[in-house]
Length: 178
Image (cartoon, rainbow, N blue to C red):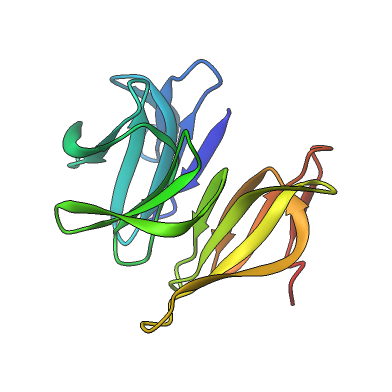
């Protein structure tokens, strides 16, 4: 697969390199192919979102994905612990869905990940050894910022606030920032 997310029930969702989207069926012990192509999939807070091949955002309703009118040009998606999707678009801009509005968040990136503890991590756009710079979101109400952390990555996923990354050499790292 090309992209993977695991929902709150432990069910994996997989996007293949040709854009097919699968969900694991525990009862049938098999992968179920879902309708429509995808670029990325994200889960969190009991919700599942995907970026379709048309680069629009879709939310899973338990039986199908429904297109959301707002939010498009998606490249990478994650879903935070409250069920809100965050995206990085093809220009590297970051957006978070607040109600029916996509709010732009300062910064720029290539990939984004959310932890079940509420943490948000970003693979930036500054080239460094191993890929691109890494940041953790500091959600200070007065001045939210991205805090630079040591390391370089090309992809990121977060579990319990701890990032897992792959780098440009295709090595996998976890808990580098303890």
